[in-house]
Image 1 (cartoon, rainbow, N blue to C red):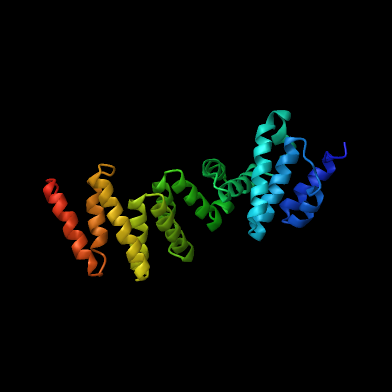
Image 2 (cartoon, rainbow, N blue to C red):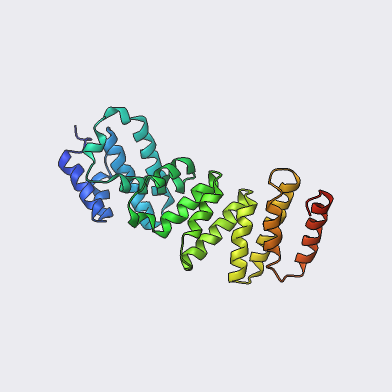
Length: 250
């Protein structure tokens, strides 16, 4: 019985979490060997909170392990939501989603993050950036782009553009990478943004030639390239237009 959190201690852990007293919550659970879903969740949430606060990937990995074990043992306690009602579903989904995303489990992370209804969380740049990354990694770059379009111009939207540009490029989602690099280049004429935009535009063109992208997207690519003053752009445009003419698209 020594390894089971009494109800009073469980509620005290939740109280500390709700008041952002993460260290106090950790003290109460650090030596706990969980046996019930409630205990697995509390251990996971405490480690996720510590990881979020300190930037520790170790705590986030530990949180993921406890959440996974909780999923496996969920049939132990059908009244789990009632037992943990002081700690809201949004709080759980926030910590669970960030923990999952931080260790690359983007599908479950997306499911948790989109389940958050609390506007305080949804407007947080941490939430927006992680959800955008989940969308991209799960093959939904258009949804990540929509997150950007809904933002006001700010340093946070600029950071999101960089995330979309680079993550989409890595994932071969070149159209949305090109869109993001195009905006970045117009905001800041850094040569790196042109190089990223050039590579992404060529990637879209190659996908069109291979039949993996619709030819309609060529017009979008050409329009973005015309926004650039770099002398290399004229040659790239000529090659693309020549191919389009040969295909009867010009």
